Image 1 (cartoon, rainbow, N blue to C red):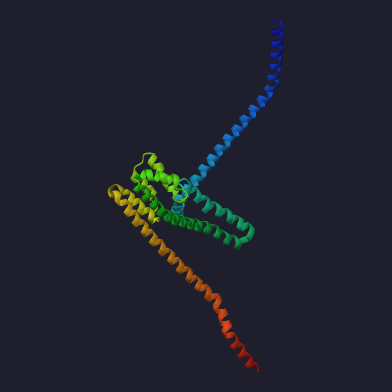
Image 2: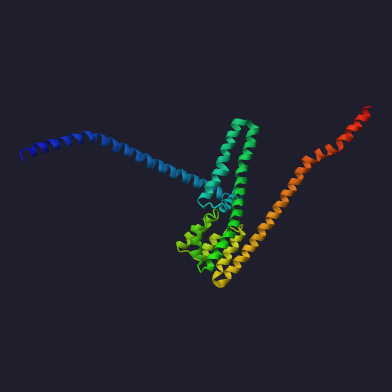
Length: 291
C-alpha cells in the first residue's frame, strides 16, 4: 500500500505536466477552428447576399417592359431545355447581359472602336441565338423521346399497371431511352408523391405546347379513365401520327439539303464546266485573231 501511493502520485504528476504542455496547443487549435468557422459563416452570408442581389437584378430584367419580350423568348427556350424556374432568371442575367457587357468592354479595350462595336454586337446576339437553337433541339429531342414514352406506356398498361405506376417505372428504368424527357417525368413523379392531383401533374408534364407528341400523350392520359382498354389503340394512333410527321420533316430536310447542294454546285462547278467546254474555242478564236 505504501508503494502504491508514491507511484500513483508520480503518475498523476506526469499526467498534469502533459496536460499543461498540451493545453496551450489545444487552446491555439480551438482559436484557429473558431476563426475558420467565423470566416466560413461570413463567406456563406456574403455568397447568399450575392445570390440575392443577382436574383433581384434578374427579376428586374424579367419584369421590365423593355426586356419582357426578349426574356419570354429565352425563358421558353430554357424551359424546353429543362431548366427550373429558379435557374432561368439567373441564366438569362449571366448569359444575356453580364457576359455580353464584359465581352464588350474587353473588345473596346483590346480592338478599339470598330472591333468593340463588332464584338458587342456578337456578344449580345450569339448567346441568344445559341440558347434558342439549343431549346429547339431539346424540344425536337423530347418530341422523339415522347414516342418511346408512348411505346413503354402502352406495354406497361397492357400488363395492367396504372399510370402512376407506369411513370414510376419509366422514371427508374427508362433513363437510357429518355435522357432529355426524364426531367419532366421526374417532376410528374414528385408532384404525385407530394399529393397533387393527376390532372395537375399531367398539366405540368405537358405545359410546353411545342412538343406535340407529349401534348397529345397528356390529353390522352387525362381521358384514360374513360377510355379503359382503348388507351392502347389511341397510343398506337399517336405513335403512327408522330412517325408520319417525322418522316415528312426528314423528307423536307433532305429536299432542303439537296437545294443547298444544287446552289453550291452551280456556284463552283458551272464556271469550271464553261471553261472546260468553251476554253478551247476561245483559245482558237484568240489565236486566229492574233494571226
